[in-house]
Image 1 (cartoon, rainbow, N blue to C red):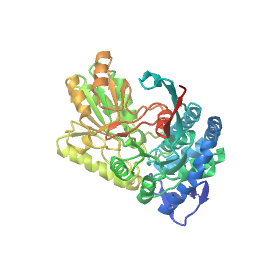
Image 2 (image 1 turned 45 degrees about the horizontal axis):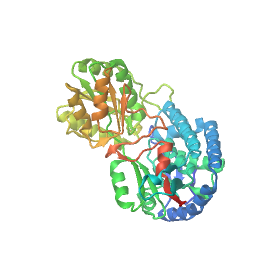
Image 3 (image 1 turned 180 degrees about the vertical axis):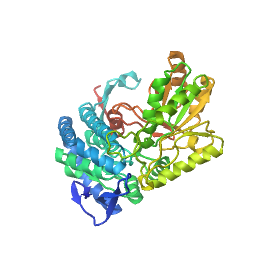
Image 4 (image 1 turned 60 degrees about the vertical axis):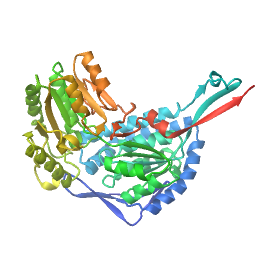
Length: 477
């Protein structure tokens, strides 16, 4: 069994209280991590004040070298990280290896951005009162960044916060999900080994009390949170005067127009709807298909979904593993039942399979779901895809926008004018043409509108939130 002490300002510390880590596929306890407290947060902040000074005193090149050393270590230990991800999250071994490689790229992009943090000359003499004055701004680290991450991508989503924050010269306090603390602690250990000043990194597994202590502490200048809308709302209300960056999920849509490539669209919906058992913030959840190709699309999708192999996530051939817990399976089954009671049709799936402890829900397709059903309105976070027909482009845009969320949307069409109608009309942080909404390159600006969040991730864009602008003016008159 893997046992990990927390990291408190670079110090490995066992608190005497432990978080059990459960393998979702079997219900077996496969590891544990030291449980942090509010007091640990306050100690971490005291150390991070000094850690920030040490990080900020490093040159951009020195920070680059440290992060590139960390990337080398991660690449060497990729399989160990991947197998730990399977045990923590229940994702398949293939999905876990992909996450490690993505985290590696996020780390490398962050290292490279450390060398590009600059400013801009401001032409002050363009203003009537600016004659004789020269101005420019520089970017400085905010100081301490608080990072709170979810269970589904414990390595890469932690990396998306920690690596850019360090690249910018900050100290970081990371609170991973209480369900998946092992790989984030392993990441902290790796960064320390690579040469990050010890006081600049803390990894504190815990529950809501730890998260609240981080988000409300006045010395922490940025809170970067990925997780549920409910918790994001709580953090926003309690954070006080500091920057808040939120990535809160979605019920992402795909639109298949009458001229779209149906075979490609089916492939992308399957890849986006059932990866990590649908437990991804940009999972495909709602699919709107033009009425002329609706039956053909639904038939082809159903045929391909029923071929997916479900089961042991350590099996190299498994396509869909377990959800994070039995309670989550029960929740989504109740949503499916509600939709069916309102007139929706369960096309395939919708039942748990094997031992209940395994937390597995068979990949599911539900059609003709009313817009007031939870399965349409809320974030399913499960291997379930809704398929509804539409007639006109304006109708499809309205159906996509009939949501509190707006993260990413995929549109399949060969008509550039139709594509532009969706680009202009859809309320979302990203519109992907002939690609699923689950696509993400880790250096692009990623984030949403409406209840999907505030701000953007991607190392270059995260660094904008993890730095402050300082204006400098010389009067040469």
